[in-house]
Length: 330
Ligand SMILES: Nc1ncnc2c1ncn2[C@@H]1O[C@H](COP(=O)(O)OP(=O)(O)OP(=O)(O)O)[C@@H](O)[C@H]1O
Ligand SMILES: [Mg+2]
Image (cartoon, rainbow, N blue to C red; front, side, top):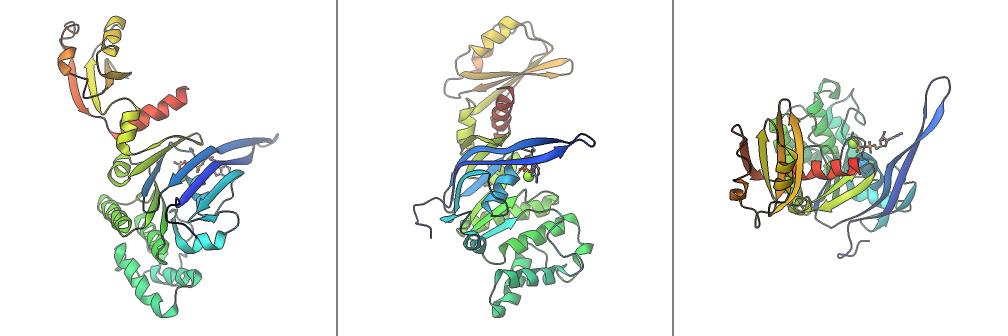
C-alpha cells in the first residue's frame, strides 16, 4: 500500500520501444523509441497534465501506468504497487479513459454497457443501479442512457467512456485527451467535472493538446517530446523556464541584423524569436517583467513607420512551443 508521503505515480528511467515491419516486398524491421528514459513523480491529489506533440509517447506512458502495456525497461509504481507484479491491485483503484470508438458494446444501451463494466469491476450488486445512475448524471448522459450505443455521437461515446472510468470511484484517474470531440458546452462541463473530482481528492493524470485546458486545470505539467520528458513544472514555472512571464511582439516589414542585435541585448530580454508573416516579420521577445521597460524600445526603431507593438502575458502555449521547438532543433 501507499504511504501518505509516497508519490502516487513514481516512474524511473522508463523506456518503451515498438518494432514494426515497413515496406511490402522487402520488409525491413523498424524500431520506434516511444519512451526514452522517462522519470516522473505525481503526488497524491495532484492534477497533473502531460503535453507533447503527436507521437511523443503520451498514450504509451498512460497505457503503461494503467497496466495495459509493459515497458521495455525501467520501473513504475502506481499507488505504491509495481506495474509488473501488482496489476490487479492497480486496476482496482484506477480509472482509465482512452476514448475513441473502441471498448464499448455498440449493440446495447449505454446503461447496459455500464452494468457490464460494473460487474467486471466487482461493484456490490445492491449498489450497481444507483452508482450507474450517479455516473450517468455526472457526465450528463441520463437522457440517452437507454439508447443503443451505435446511435451515439462521438461526444456521447466519450462521455460513456468517462462514466465507465468513474464507476468504481477510482483514486487515480487517467484521462487521455478527454475533451476531444466534445462540443464546447460538454468540454466545459467535463473540465468542471475534472476539477470537482480533483477537489474531492481524486488524483488526475491527463493528456491534452489544448493548452488553455492544461493551463486552466493542471497544477503541474510535464512536456514529452520524442519520448523524453523535456520539462516538468507548474504552468508559471514553465513560463519562467522559457525566460519570461511577459511577451513583446513587434511586427514590421523588415528588421536588420543590427536592430535584432540591439533588441536581443535590451535589459530583461531572455529570448528572441523570428517568424515570417508573409510580407511582414514578427519578432517575439520573452521578457522578465521586473527588468523590462517598454520605453527601452524607443530609439533605434525609427525606420519602421508601420511598426506594431503588442505586450502580453506569456502563455503556456508560448512556453510549450519554445520548449518543444528547442528540442526539435537540438
Ligand atoms: N502498437 C504500436 N506499434 C508500433 N508503434 C507504436 C505503437 N503504439 C505507439 N507506437 C509509436 O510510439 C510512438 C508514441 O506513440 P503515442 O501513441 O504514445 O504518442 P502520443 O504522444 O499519444 O501521440 P498523439 O498526440 O498523436 O496521441 C509513435 O511513434 C507511435 O507510432
Ligand atoms: Mg495519444
